[in-house]
Image (cartoon, rainbow, N blue to C red):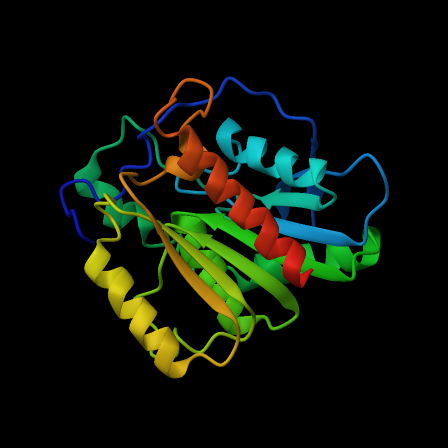
Length: 245
């Protein structure tokens, strides 16, 4: 981590007072937030939460936005009932807390969600979007699940896999210039290695003057100077999904 004293500043930004338009449902062994568009759709996006878990209003806001744009959005509890991180938790215990919540160890849950989408929702085209911890997970899905046709990894990056540059599906990587968790030197390495190793479409985009969490943790209505970047990143996310799904 770039900042061992505080390895994930995800509480930066604004916690939304937002209830959501969807429903909480049980998908096999995991609870999930599911929201569907007003008209039928055979397209879906798996929305992967940050360290604050699947019930964070900010993440549900993004899921609802995806549904408003024609996608069935599913945000599963990838911690499977274990407590998410809390802003009041001791940051010195973060790595210990993370030990049984690896973003690259979610295949059982992903498989369950894929079955649900295909068998119960009639979905044929699936993408993924993830934030921070979920950004790492979205990167992971692009390596292990070619059936997921597109991914958007928002301020998340895999560091430990040797094959992490050999994407099997197109991925848009969104980063912040002033991110303490994923510094620009790591982004530069990612860009160079993707150019060298990756055979599918990909894009790495860095937003100037932004900090970790800006896409889903900052409210565009009360952060006027950040608003153009927030809206641009969300538009990029939708455009990328629309291009491949």
